[in-house]
Length: 80
Image (cartoon, rainbow, N blue to C red; front, side, top):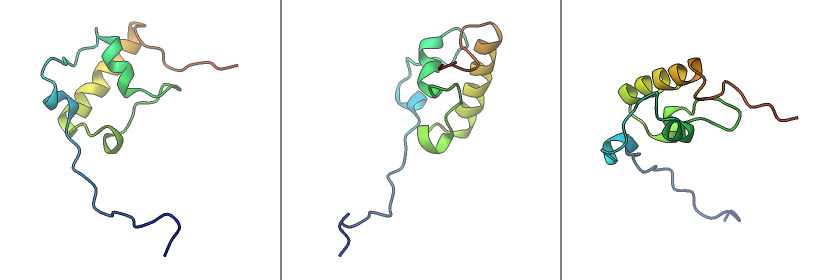
């Protein structure tokens, strides 16, 4: 018996947060929402972590890139 116990190999199906919350609008003008899907270093989180479906992941990527272009979101964070 492992000291970590039994591992559940079945993962629960992730639900798209944009389908679950209809009030969340994917828009580049909403940086507070877009920050939820970006790491502290500025990388866009992948679908397998966030649970966003493919269509919304493409829309999310486009919105993040547009928000970066007009300086609503930073490209990177400088930690010195």
